[in-house]
Image (tube, rainbow, N blue to C red; front, side, top):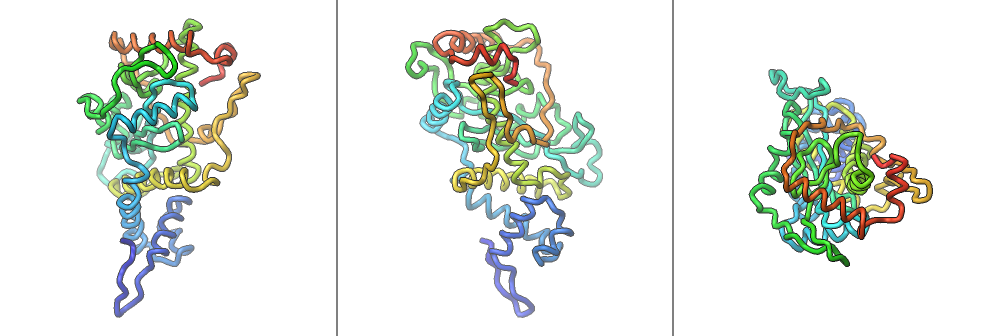
Length: 338
């Protein structure tokens, strides 16, 4: 797919050279003009090679390394790992979104202008318990209110139409408690029966604080995934100065490569992720402390649905009774879990 034919005028740039230049571009964030000297390929050629190579990465690797779950069995595997590693039962993934800074296209006006007075497209993603993306939705313009970002995603459309094949309400492992399967997110999202978010406000009961702590442990997954992505692919530390279609390809290719390296390279995560000291309650933040992508704006959702609030209360009851862990009171008393 990357191999081109030689011509009578010159030899073709090899597949190895094309891939090497693209990986260097993603890893360093250097412009085509700057990169051309280190890879010995003109910026005009790079402007064609890098989008083509990103297309090849997507076509070759996406099916294996970033395939959205389609069956109930795949969702159950994700939920099982979340419960085993993060003690949050029936969790199908942690969802969050970030603004990817761009140089706006000519004559685009305020179309990409976000709430931080910058220009961006939105990267909406879901991660599993292994710090891998299981869903990526790219390209929503930064001007869209953050509460509306998820509403415009393909994921949300499938969630609303019931076409995700999410498992039905079931008993929690080794328990008599019955709870639905849910995604977890932060205050940027609306509370739904299938999407849990924290209890709002500063004046919370001890039980609500424990729920928020347990939820935050699961949500840290996606925060760390974004942090790893930014630190390994420094293109995300820049304002990307390319056309929007190419930016979408670059972001998708980087997310696929993240999953590929996560599974195949032990050295990919160099410094580690959040570490909880279960003795003193302190949290040593990992990659998410150096995450330079802009958060989605906290959304005032008004009154949540009655059923959604009921489901959250049921999870709260579980975490405060048979689903409790020994250290949760220590963490919530110290207020160190955000």
